[in-house]
Image: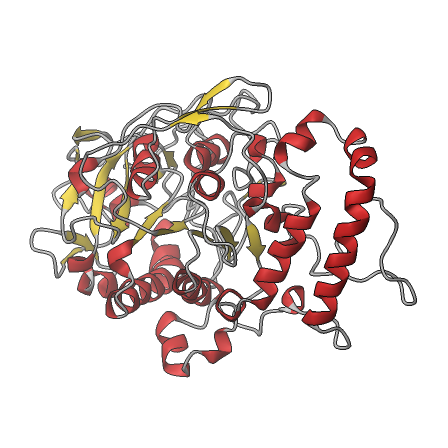
Length: 494
């Protein structure tokens, strides 16, 4: 917790690292607005050499909305129908035509079918993850662009730590930060969750807490709690600025002693730069655009209903508002835990080991189709899609053969984990719309043409943001790290 004001009757606390301004509590990942705000004031601790690519699409996007479909939907039933395959593979859903010539979708996505001329599909994403194809390792790979090094042999997750490599959003915040009074990396709807591990692959890892996301996981169908952005009623901004000036004087007098108390890593990451950090906090508090993005009640009810009055739908609307407020990277994570049993209702998991078809037909797809189609349509109408890259993808696909046991427990009518081949939706940010990139084989089991590794997809996100995915930097132990473990941007999308 951080506080702008000390106890009543005192101007501030002692010269310990207790902060002056109370601007909010801790988030799911252990960091709230205060820790997040350090990201624009921390001096560089990473030395990198950037190249200047001239390939198509470089720098074509100003921002990203990353829609992570936690639990992994079936690519065959949503994005890549196989009407000519045997019944035990093609499943129960018929293909439907779309607004994009030659593109078909599963019948459970009729509203997205009408928006298909505004997005493209990649139908040849796939990889062979280390260990068994479980959620944990696949999530880590998708979120960070690196192979997991500290997972169990079965690919199960371990709690996040500062030894992790940074999330894509954290790297974007580091290498292309937003303006001084804007957010660089925000996560909404829910955290990544696998078994008992929360926040897997969402933090900044070795980059330090300065680049962790600002997380808002309150239910957006209800008024969001914005006390984090407020000052105590009796305190004016002018009074706070006076306290900043006094604090600056006190800090200057004790700077030498203070610096002796900090480790070399703290100095390198800028955690001793409290004065600049304090002003960053004030700039967010004073920024109407940054704070107002969270006030969903300002939206007309017709717009809110078009997005859907569900946690996922209102989170997509919040993402659009954050993009309007010039946030660099917003991640919207489907709210159910990745390995939950598929339960009825709007917030259940995509992990359909059993009852795949009724779950998709009755629960998952109506919500997803309604809300994602609204986001694409709304952003297009507002002129935001041209410079915002929208990506929707799960951590893997589902097994082509229904009810077939691969590595996990599969029940009647279920599809197992399948990282070998799956699909991603990609729109805006310079991507040519209405096209299909890549092709899977006749059973949707393996890429047939133009295979795309998940790391290639991540390279494409960085590339669109104008960040060279081949960039190398030094971590906190001066070890060279590549921004993405391997791969290259899929420039054929632009």
